[in-house]
Length: 285
Ligand code: PDD
Image (cartoon, rainbow, N blue to C red):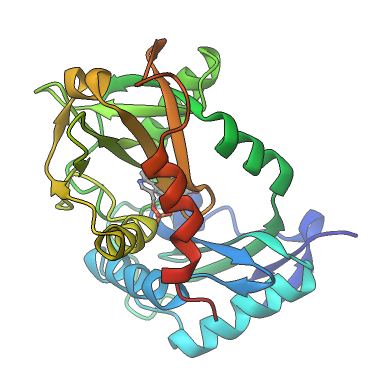
C-alpha cells in the first residue's frame, strides 16, 4: 500500500507529494510541527497537541491556517488513508511560500500545511520497553526558546546522531551547569534513591511534552512524589531509575547513561507502572 500525504489542500501519494522550494519551512526552518500517537486508529491527546500547536504558531506569529476542527478532520483522514492502527500522525505548518527574504512575507501569505501518518513497529516498541534503552549526554547548544515546537532541529539531529554512533537510543542535553534539560526528541526523568520522581520544570528551556503532562497526572493518581526541578548528571548516575517520555515512545525506561548502568541496570518499577497506566489518563478521540 502506498502512503498518502496531505499537502496544502490535497491528498497525494507520498512519492508525488511536494512543496514549493520557496516554502519558508524549506528555506529557513520557519515552521512548527506536532506528533500525535495513533492507537487503535484513534488520536491520543489531540486536544493538548492542538493547543500546543496553536501556541507555537502564535509565538512565531504564524497564522493558524484553519480551525482546529478542520485540522482534526485532515489528521483523521490522513490516518485513515494510511491505515494506521498504531503509529504517529505528523503535522507541519510553515510560514508559507514567498521569495527568499528573511523578514516575514506579505500579510495574507498562506501558511503551508503538510500532514503524514505511518504505522510504527509495535513489537519493537514493546521490546525496547522491556529491555530499556541507553542514552548518552551532549552539551545543550540550542537557542533559548525550545518550548516552541519548531522544525528547526539541527542540534537535535546532531545529538540523536551522536547517540546512534554510540549505540544509544537517545541523547540527553546537559546545560552549562551540568544539569539535564531534556532528550533530543523526548523529556528526561529520574527516580531518586528515596523514590522521588524528578523532571525539569517546563519553562522556555524544554519542550513541555504532552506525554510529560499526562505522566504528571498518572504520578498524582499513583500517589508518587514529584519534584519539577533540574537534576544534575551526577544525580542521574546515582538514580534508582531513569526514563524518557514522548508521544511515539510513551514511557521508555533508560538503563544506561553514558555507558554506566542506571540502578540495577534493568527497567525500573516506576517507569514500567507509568507506561502501563498511561493510556488510562490520556485522551483518545
Ligand atoms: N518529539 N522534547 C523534545 C525536544 C521533543 O522533540 C519531544 C517530542 C518531546 C516530548 O514531547 P511529547 O510528549 O509532546 O511528544 C520533548 C516528537 C515526538 C518528535 O520530534 O518526533
